[in-house]
Length: 354
Image 1: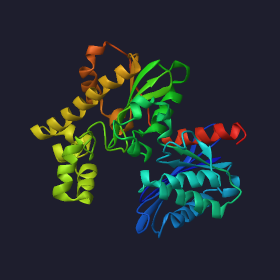
Image 2 (image 1 turned 45 degrees about the horizontal axis):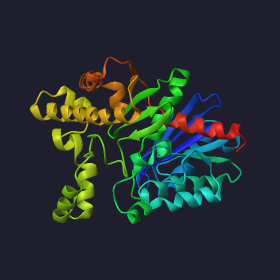
Image 3 (image 1 turned 135 degrees about the horizontal axis):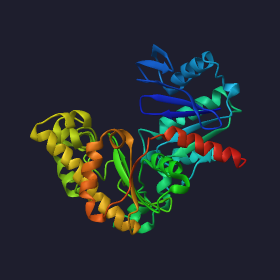
């Protein structure tokens, strides 16, 4: 069995897979660092945790009660949000890999430390258990330099200011889902509260809408998407850096335009604000899609994943209506499953002898 762990800023999610990549059990601990809830299968109970290490300990106890003990695990596998330019493919967790993850913490200060905390805590409990890591940015490492380089001085580029792209595990799962039927020129949308797209040419990412951070690109649930840097400087001069960050990441997007970041609510409302928010979301998804189609030199199919991409047919239809100028192409809906991709990555490394 493979235990997949996803340590968020204030949560810990787990899922157990067998070696055929069938999900056996999943659960989570919410509100890590305070009063929260532990869920595992049918079990739900209130818990209080000080940190991710304590949350992991409680989850391991719950798994043991479900007859999934650490000694029965083949491996553990972790989601790491950012690998920078160093960690561009899944890896077995070693002291060198841990050091590399630490070195890119400045690129994901709210996420990588928690991802590391889960690894180190599990290492304390089960030092002989092989651990693996998959990186949310790695799928986009195949982007050419012309797609990743900002037109800024070399010193800033060398300091790490470049496009990285995110949602890579979701796109990697999509490629695996298609298998031998993968279209050569696939336009992939991951649409949820966070939204992005990816130009996938022969199974590799060659362009994506998110950049240095997940803020750029499409209109999202609470993120602005693309905004002129000069506008950000002006806003920051008025509000300060911290408040500007909060505004652009938490209080913009659909929430700012329609007063709500829940697409289901917006689609059910009949007022002009909700209608405009929906149209803005679809229009800018299509605008960015045109750029991605140019980057990969054609379009053979479109695929949607993520909460909105999978569950909101009107959004898919509106985006495809904007893209009608590119011809009539097949449209696919693929269930998002980053955890399965993380387990798949780990199993591949295990089978390769790592």
